Length: 513
Image 1 (spheres, rainbow, N blue to C red):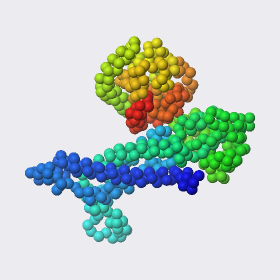
Image 2: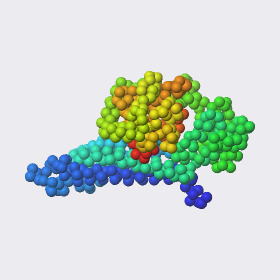
Image 3: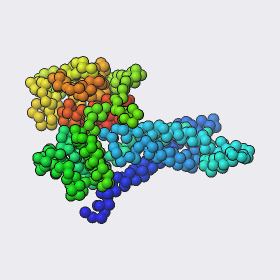
């Protein structure tokens, strides 16, 4: 490996974060300039804002004489950029760790934009020249006066357009989300090509270790290159588990790490004595290698939990989260509004698809199937029929377009998830929600264990985290983590993020549903 390659591998994350800060700065400045241009060039010409102060006989041709020059916003936009970058850092947007499908990052961008808007408004009030006292101040307040004079802005808020400020932060939110989406995709491409990846070793080839391997393989964009397992059982050494080989026993930790140039270690031995795990952690601390331990209470930790202390004894308890009546009402109103709008706009498509389906194969236009909803209540889910009538049974769903059961029209509908449009009828009737876990068939729900039944705590959705994930080609019931994450972290903002990501997935034709 060249010196440049070695430098990039060792400093990939700091370089990416530094570039991200510069990109965010440029994006914020561009958003502010666009807001000023929109306000002064387009909205201002329609007699908004400063034009209201123009003489009665003035017309649009006199606009430039009354427009607020860009120089008046120079300090305001500089303050906005500084506040936004500080807020981005405070809300963890420059952390190297990423959330599931980056949904938390998109939520944080929204929170940052709103918070920064109010911070800038407050600072504009306190840092204006008019806030300085006219008389000299002595005593203990003199240093405060000097400090205020040093940081005071040559700006009078009343001379600024409120619409420009509001547009600035609306565009900051919009442009930042787009730039972050592009940045995530670029980083994913780099990781897929092996650039910036870190070699990781899993200690423990049991069930949890294999789950980790699945995640590494499913989501290569995490930047984690799985090199193999270590296990306590010497008989497993040399065997292959999935795509990973057991490279040795736990005693071979230091040797394997040196040979494979391991950068991170995942300890997945939930049934091992704590003393052994602590011994491994001590060895890794001495070597300066980052490590992560899968907890013994793996399933319990899938929930939102909090740690309390009974004197010096730590206790784990599950955070009880009950949705308020207001949040439930807001979600229902969102479901009704979205479903009504979608059904209204796509009504002509319903007619077109109905004709195409009937002309190609015999049978009904709609396919109805019993699914299990919230709290185990069954309902009839409606979809456009995409398979031949004789093949529409409770069987394994088609994995690809070449499945002979799928009709020609069905292939098109499935590719762009158009076969799911009738699901919005279920949403309007209150049987489903726009966002939620995908509903399963009764015979699968009958096999649910206690953890799987957590899916039934939420109303099933047309789309969800699993549908826009890398694991969407797998069976619904084999990806419990996505549904649990949504149920434990659901909010109106999270729903909006998932809907937006679903739009991208559908536009790409990847079959998000």
